[in-house]
Length: 334
Image 1: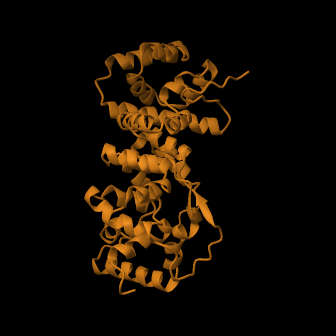
Image 2: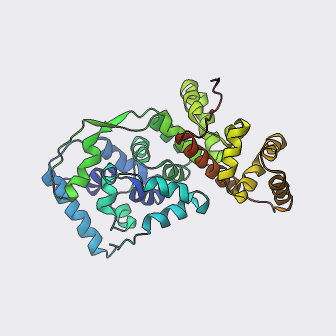
Image 3: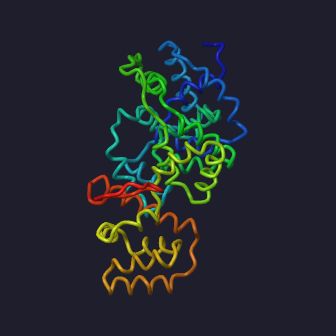
């Protein structure tokens, strides 16, 4: 135990980070710190529960010594989500968060009372492969927020690795959480599927358009087949507007006039007219008037509204209320 460096100890914790704790840690990581810890994390193998217990005790001792343990309120998750994506998307995300089983996110539960800054002191940097592993365990909106903070070059590296990530031994995910409870990992399952093109498509759907385009362009240049697979699973605001009239009307009944107004700022006149045609005469007139008097808004603000509508559409699709086509898919319905 004495021959392990702090970075080697940190590797054991960081490999199991998940959900909110990972999101808060990743926000503050520096690119210059990534390489040092990454090589240690890539070499971590199964170790004794006694050693993990010792590392966990050291971590919590450090937390207490620095006085950074915090008491988490019941609205902690809500506040994090609101800060991450704003009110426009928070309701949908929170409803999904509520459905996540606690045993799917063990490390979050065990570290929820620790200030994320303490975790950042204990764990600092990762290799792109390790970052891909961590992002694969986060919700797409959180992973997108973190991915946007990297340089375009790092975004491409992480994206490429994440899209081709298949599985990771379950013990890596469970080990720290079990040790925090002073229990020995039993390893009920051999591995857990993570990553892949579907996860990557979900994450890109949550990113701003500039970052999304940059990543997809880089992927298309280096791996056209992979890029095509991701694009076919992505859902854009334009895809939603290509719905048949009945489906579009269903969606328009569920979204706020504020979101649809902002979202339409980024589409051409033809698509706007399709929206108007699928509203009541009075509703269309009000929306046109709102667009005429709406002051200029940031592209990012309009994209937030588009993503909020996309999430509503995906939820409706899951409920069987509408059928969506993605990207260049050529499927026909009869």
